[in-house]
Image (cartoon, rainbow over the protein chains, first blue to last red):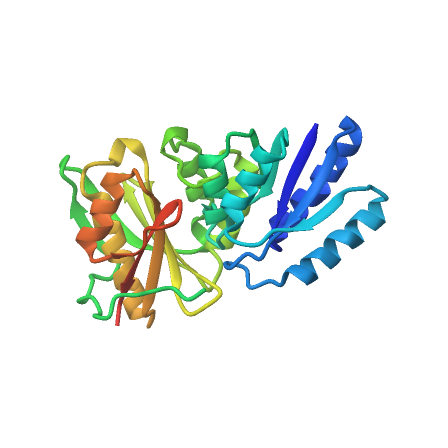
Length: 122
Length: 174
């Protein structure tokens, strides 16, 4: 399978990276990591890419990394469709201190609009 | 990310302790709660209808309920419980966020829903908040939960963000 993992710099997105690497290794999947700036997170895509590369080095897993511009949700959906990915993976659904799960706007867009199966890691 | 609050503060809310009669004629006590109510709250949440859970809370398993209560019964949080015949039937909590506001949540056992207890619980918790000098309170609610949205609106909450998966509502207390 060809997996498209979106990483926007939230803690859950890095958790999703760890889990997806582990799963892809077991299943023999090809992994593409799509890095984007998440407005809700105030992150910078170079710093995210750096951390993704470190994680890949540490685990010795090979994956391609690419940066996506524009609206992250719609770009992820487009890329998955136009390049025939089999699955989109995203980490989202952080909990407030009170404990309520809050789905981010990017994850919501992808879940509602993707024609590709989506795995939400939370 | 800054949260939007109404410009105008709400009027004064009643503070606990209070006693009222619900629409089913039951006598309900509302009072402040703290860490000493932990065991009684665990018993209440074990009886909570799983279908009434929202946005991941209350948790289902007892160990997860205990962990969750530890967070929201902490000294910097404010809690009000509703009891009937000595058993807890409702609970509302204010938990500080990482900015200057407090997040609100409320839970009522299904047998006690639709009797006006939720509105009184929220108002009494906001009254406690006012007496504690709390100024800004917000919450999130599932978009399709019309009953809860109507309740919050009646109390004075205004929608502050409706573009996310959950509707966010806020009130200014002072």
